[in-house]
Structures are given as structure tokens and as C-alpha cells.
Length: 398
Figure 1 (tube, rainbow, N blue to C red):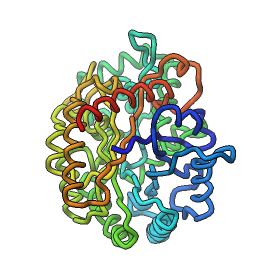
Figure 2: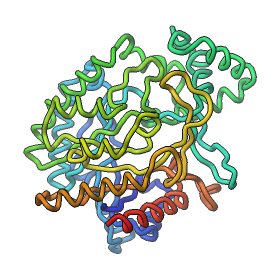
Figure 3: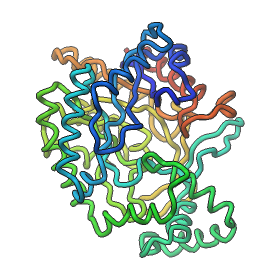
Figure 4: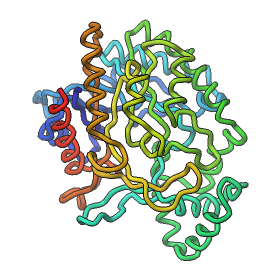
């Protein structure tokens, strides 16, 4: 697999020089400063390529290999607002990316939230930190801080009672910290987000069933996949994170069955999956090897990370902690072996995309990560450790 590294651009505390020392050979990046629904211009794309390939005027030996993400606007997801204009901007952005040589494009179709954690610095026994999702803490936010109408009916009475007691223990300061952690998963999140902003974002999806959001995703793909086919682009959708409904919002890609339905509805090599073992692996029934066996030919990009279910659960909603890459609930060795076998099958059939790009997703904050500023879940040392471990498994599976 092509070993890549997510880089958030010039403001990322992890520099391109740092990335070179990790052993990664490619970069995953995006134009995070361009508002959703607007065109990514040739000039901005070329600028990011130069920042990756020629930092400080010297060749880095790295290339921009995967776009993560070319965001799908809330207008397109909800089919409310300037949908037509945003679709045209998306198609034009795809064209501009292809003309600059970028052909693997990751996106997600999660409404409002990109990802959700309740603790961004959960202490670990060895002294490091990990991100964690605690279901009781999330219910505290949903029912008693955000006060979403009808929220209490989404959970069992027993766990709501536990959350109410936790709410009383947290106090104002604890609730502010919890809110900040959850808001961090909002696209472009910053200190300007208020609870009223979050409530307003939820309005567009009020009463929207799972089936309706899936239909909107299929409509989106029907609009953009023909362009991707013409340009030789591989679109790959990231799964829901975590893979169950939150804040009354529908979910559309939480299981292998979800992927099979969507990929079958728009059956094109240009429409595929971002296979994220961390997101899908939160679900108890997730079988990564079976997923690869059935849908591996449609996997265009891989996120390798691990999670461990622990603590309160309520039906199919779980608490979990980000685990070591080779630890946690997902058998990473078996997963990598299945992915390497998929690459071998591609080589046998002459597929041009026989080498699947992967990146070590998330990681524990370790050593100097504990004092270095950065994006939650994206420490330097923790990800480098993960990449080294994953590289060893990949070499042993070849």
C-alpha cells in the first residue's frame, strides 16, 4: 500500500520536513480555507502542491496523492438551498483537480458533524492521551446542555438517568469543556460556534429519515460520477464516525450493507469507499476481512486506526477509546493481509490503481506530542509509531 500522511497545510504544526522523517511517501491534504460550495481553483490547487513538493524552495520528495476532503456542502446533503450551484462548483473542482494530476478524492456525507468525541485528551496508563467517545457524556450534551427537543426519547430511560446525574457533577466548567470537545467535530469548528449555531444546523435535517439521506447521497453521486468517470477520478466516501445516529441526525454509511446499497445504486469504478477501520470498527458486528472480500474492488483509500469499546452503551450505541493501531477491537493484521491480497488481485487483472493509498489515522499523543499544539487526533509521534507498526505488518503480509 502507498504510505501517506495527512497534512493540514502550512498552519499544521507537523511540517513537510517532519513528514519526510516518518517514512511516508505521499501526502493527503485539502484546501480547508475554501468555503464549502465554492470552486477549488487551479491557482489554489497548484499552490498547495508547491507547498508539499517544494517547501522552502527545495524538493521534498513528497507528492499530493489524495484529496481529503473535497467537502460536500450541507445544501447538497439536505437538498435545501443552492443545490444546483454547489453541484456545478463540485464538478468544476473535480475537473480542476484532475487537470492538476489529483485523482483520488475522499469526501463524507455526514450531516453537520464530521466526527464526534467527548474527550480529546483522555489519559492513558502510560502517560499519553487518546481521544474518547463516552456515551453518557454525549447524552449530557444532547439532553441537558444543547437541550435538543425530544432528545431524551432517543435513549433508554436508564442511561438518561445516569446522564442527568453526570450533568449535575460536571458543573458549568465541565459542561463548557464537553461542549468545546464536541464542537471540535464541526466543519471549520472554532470558538465562534455557539449552542444556537448548532441548533440552527440541526433544523435542516429535522425529521429526515435514514432512507431520505441515502437517497440524497445517491442523487449526489448520479450528478458527479459521470464527471469523475470522464476525468479518471476515484471518489471514495468516508463512513460515519461514529457509526450510529447522533443528535437526531440520520446516518447513511455505517455498515457494509450501507456501502453495498449505495455503491450498487451508482455502480461505477469511479464511485468507491474510503475504508476506515476506526469508524466502522466501533460497531460490534464489523468484519473487516468480509468487507474487503465483498467490496474490496471498490476501496480507493484506506484509513488504518483502531478503537476499543469500553464503558456505557445503549443498544447499538457504544462508548469507545482510540486504541493503539495494532490493539483495539479490529484485527489489524488480518485486515492488512486482506488488503494486500486485494492489491495482488488488482495487479493480476492489470488495474492501474493496484497500489491502494493508506494513512495511519489518528494516534495517541506521546512524548513531545503532549506539549506540541496540533489537530485533535493527529499527533506527530503517535502517528509515526502507528505508521511504523503498520508498515511492519504490510511488509510481513507481502
